[in-house]
Length: 532
Image 1 (cartoon, helix red, strand yellow):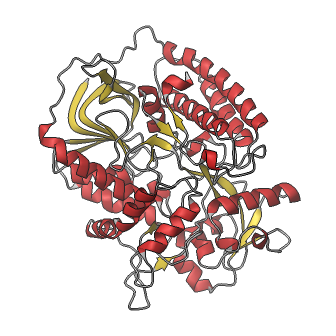
Image 2 (cartoon, rainbow, N blue to C red):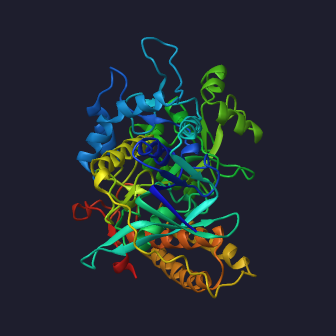
């Protein structure tokens, strides 16, 4: 079946939903989301959204904190406009119904948190459930719009492109989409296609991300020939709850912002050895420090201690974390929290310009799927939700300039060809390869890397990719098979980018190249033709 729409938005996080609200003024919008519409990385964001809203703070200081954290790879102009465009985007979220936690100490209107790398309190939040509150408000707003259709339990397979009149440049016309519930593959034809599919944490064995974070948008864009940038910069959140029964539950950086102290199991502190900001150091510093201490001590975790703060304050400020930890027998008001790093955020992605345009005409990207230049080699905490709302607005601004002249293509698009495929009778192949890729990435392409580890990872992933390719075209597509293909592609991109960067910078640390070098003060760009 073929569907026609003006805007095809793949993904239902803060970037996709906020863009849909605005694009609906121009034309019809179809949102494709592979689970329920509220299931996204946004929904799991605890900390908040960074913005200068306090008179004691300044754009300059937020910009400086971002640049310092980005380790020399941030694009200064991008950092400048994202920070300066924050206040109106925050006001927009509030007008759409987002209830940020109010301050109890006038004259401040909102309670502002502080997180690693920030020298001011500038993080707006909704207790420790900011992402869930944003998703609630945006979904309610979208539900009130007649021009927006959400297709839940649908997953993008591949982008649809055609050659332009020169025969050299591919133009995006939409995407092939799998209806997960009935196994049918539909053609979605669109004037504009926007990737807002989030991140790729499930490429790693241990991650704070939900199961949907399999790098679908990055993989689709790469296969279509779009530029992919800086995939080596994977941010490992330093504080993930360590418990045998917990599935990678994030302990927000805001806990450290409110005074949480990192300690070894014996109760001694250690962050003073690594950074003058100690437990409030940027994430890459903290993650590497914890990784080093765990390897040296042989312990499986370290501790995050905030028991010195008032009990009622902690329960009120961190109700989600308090209740979740209590489920596992940990009372954060009287016991330190066992934590370890976990894959959390990808600073690279689909390369875009300041208006979210990719290298393929009519294809845009915003949110974690994109690489804008804001984060550089390491993301400053709570800049990600900000980037998403600023860039979704910029995508809308750019499209609205040319929308009236844009015609819907009536070129013939061949339906997805599933002829010759059969039902799989051996799903263990998918499960086994999925597990092997994630373990391989965790063991060899984690917080600390080496040339030998990267070589091992590359060999294993190449073998798995060949096996998946044969399997992929012989059997009917399922969500699991599509996701397996995507995490394998993304894993290969991460390894390739990490191999090309012969230095250590930000989130990329290679023990064979421990220094940061001016020769590598540039983006790592990958295009399909160069990778095979």
